[in-house]
Image (cartoon, rainbow, N blue to C red):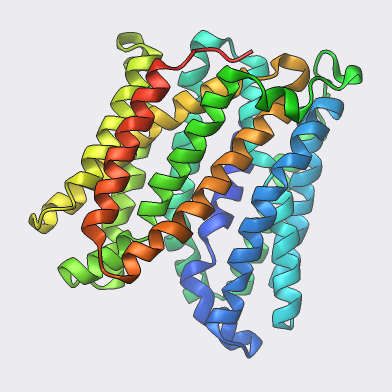
Length: 378
């Protein structure tokens, strides 16, 4: 198997792990003699470790190679997933999930960096689009996978199961040569160098704003569906899952789309589609509009986000691509956290109309700014 295939397989399992706890929190809290809110901190600590770890793994991969760092982190992820299934107390569970998040955070960014190393720029967005299909499918099905296994067997079997499955791609990676990037001994550039590059600034600012607006808005779609349409959690989950379907459809068609549309046009179209999707939620349209908006949102996301990822893989060049892309991932996670916190104030006062208007107009602006920005950061 090729290195990229193994990285895709490991990234799928990591993506499943990101969301898999949500449907089984009641079972875990009951088993550990705790509350769902307390056990839910495992998701917070996981995300925190996942996001901040980016700044460590990027530089390490520049020095020791993408595969070397990814397989070591993948081994840690596998061990932590299995150990979390054996936790006897809430404190043990939280600590192990923190470590799992720290290890998991290496896989997806380094897969994108590896794509940047090995795929020519002209074909790279197509490969990134295929990768988005893998991660979107995992996120879309993680809740159902987790809920089914936990219901039929137990949450411990669920965690232990995919922890052991992760050993397969990790083990095969250890049989591959982990070549170091050119210029690894020199260490490439510094963080301050990338932050001072005007073209790189467009990329980092773009992905921060995308994370702030998109994920800040998506976070509250469930409460919106309940407040506006009176939907239960199951119905809301099905509607939001259409977002993943739209992302998978857009990613699978990326090759055809790129043959007909330029990189800039794709970015502008992605921002426009996401903006229209949110703006369509402002009027009191029938419920079918919600489903259609989720499909548009997914298609728009893959168009704009893969463009930003494409440009992010060019920052720093071969010698410092990992370090430079770690800032890309960190910017995304920072934007997601800030957007959820700040936009939540509008939700608290019931102003979903203002929330979606701000997010919709903002995403259209991000798409246009990305389309007009310098193409290839140096």
